[in-house]
Amino acid sequence: MKSTEPMPVMAWQEIFELIRPELIQVERQIQHETVSSASAVTAIGRYLQVSGGKRVRPALLLLASKLFASPTKPAISLGAVMEIIHTATLVHDDVIDEADRRRGRPSTNSRWGNHTSVLAGDWLYMQAFKIAVQERNFRVLDILIELTQLMVEGELIQLEMIGRVDISVEEHLDLIYRKTACLFGSCTRLGAVLGAQDDKTEDLLGEYGRNLGMAFQLVDDLLDFTASEAVLGKPVGNDLREGKVTLPLIYLLDRCSAEEQAKIAKVMEEGSFQSVPWDDLLRMLERYDTPRMVKEQALLYSQKALECLEGFADSPAKRALMALPDFVVNREN
Image (tube, rainbow, N blue to C red; front, side, top):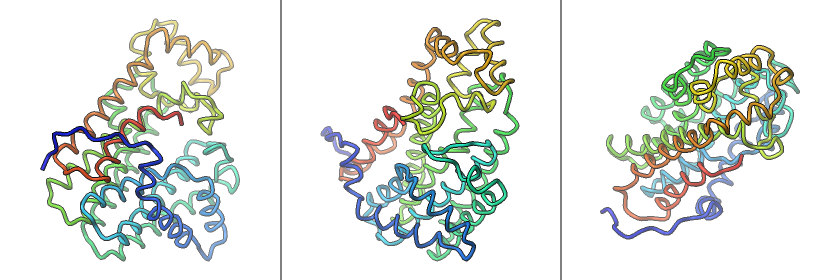
């Protein structure tokens, strides 16, 4: 039954304390499952696991499954699956983007080379599916296959967009759904599947994760311009240097002068801020108030995520899921 009483807000540490034992087991399973007879795969797996990250994706799956008191072991296994899939996408992304750094450390491709990194990413994908098959649940496999297809399509669509300055808001939102939000949505959807919920509940949890993922990526778009390199863990302004037009720039290009548009195009052409100083771009963004506009769009998605949870009974898991949108929108890295 839907509660009319306001629920207390949970802090970030409280959210993760709720699932700390399970997250520790997820880490252990990732370590166990990323050992290969090919030493390079094992080395890359260890390197990426030490690099860490917030483990938001397995956390989402674990919290969603706790809404329905689902068995813990399958949730831990699928939490590891989703993090391994996410890791594989990062390895491939860095090769495609020719990235030098990831989370403040040298990227895998800069350490092991493109060929080894691509094959290691492929191995990680297959290993994730191997673990998932052990659940003997066709619905789980359906979700993972659709997810992988969407993410690969997202990479291909992004490649077609590189260097374009005429990208619409709708095109960009579709792209970040494929590259980021569909993974979040699959995590929460799987939580409902493990809880043996009906289609309506599964769809609600999937929509919650999708909206949370959209907000997450929009904030990422913004942090690429507003964060410091030390906090972000990678060079700021990276998207623009790589020829990627994200939402802050889409809003800016729609509002700035032809001369300012030419400056943005120049940065993309050169792949650097040699002719157009970084500070000039930041001043343009502030002049046209685009950071606020992006933040407002992220807040809209976070509100949509919260609305998906309204019908669920109060519980620690629900309170944690209700707290996550605020964390996502207000994070600094």
